[in-house]
Length: 426
Image (tube, rainbow, N blue to C red; front, side, top):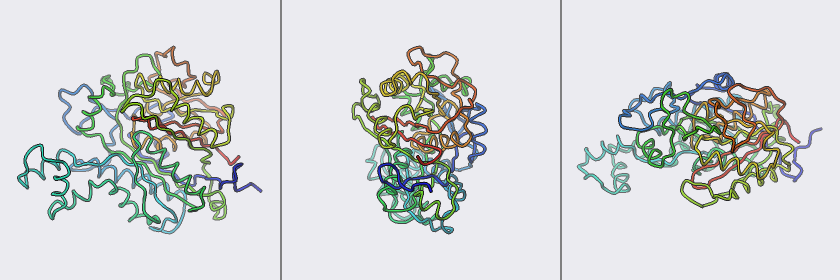
């Protein structure tokens, strides 16, 4: 009989359902087929004019029609699609009656340019008026929908209403680590015995002109626009920045005991979670790499594992010069010479950086790697950086024995999170 608790005496947390939407398509099957084929979802932006911008491509989800375009409405729809797929696979609860809480990772929400202009025109407000004042005005009568839509918890409220999760939902934003953080909160809730199941969702539909310009002003985005499919080059010497993208990932987590009691299929195990913030700079990582090192070590300790147990690293791998270098520094400090032996790849080379959704999207892909024993490639890896001697899986998928995956999310502001996922309970 398999134990229901881990070596620390905590309930084992398993995954019984997962869903995903990216620029490659909707659903696990379509995404996995294209991901392992090395296809790219990066394309030239047609959603808004890009004249005069240095970056003109992104991993947009254009197959979901939304008119007029709203990042928050798209985030709603992406989250809904991923959640529906995950719950259907898990076969848990009754329709609209999920037996646990919701942990929701979502991008910072604000009134976008178009609704701001509409509110200002209709109410005679002056240019440059205080943002909070505009938000208050938008809550009065005719703009009530805007007010509801642009509250931070609006996406979570929508999912709670449709899927019937229990208790107050938790909406969070920890930059690029948000998706992994949502999963960690679900794991911790089950381990504490507060619930037998948790719904962890991360979504981001924020490829809009304002966001693109902001990241451009930070010199964070790739400007290799032609062809767009070749723009993301993680760990390559000629990398020049990340590419914004959209997507959503959803996981149904359960205690192993609860899942087996209802005869659910176990898709994988959330064996360990680690997090550590460095507070060094708004965008840059601490030069000594200690926050990343500490985060990775915490994940290993939480899982009760050593570096020898990890068979594959699903890297954060954004393609920015500094972020890739810092990720190698952190991993090599912890793993030593083994850092050169463990297969490493970056899903972002194909789907772009899904920002707040990245940690959950990449957790789904990590679980699919465990299921299929096939490691997705890092495409556009044609000029290796000798300063980053990872065993990057280059351009074509690699069949390999994988029992444990480390999935990393290292975000702006020093928000670092690492997950360790395994095929079966230890």
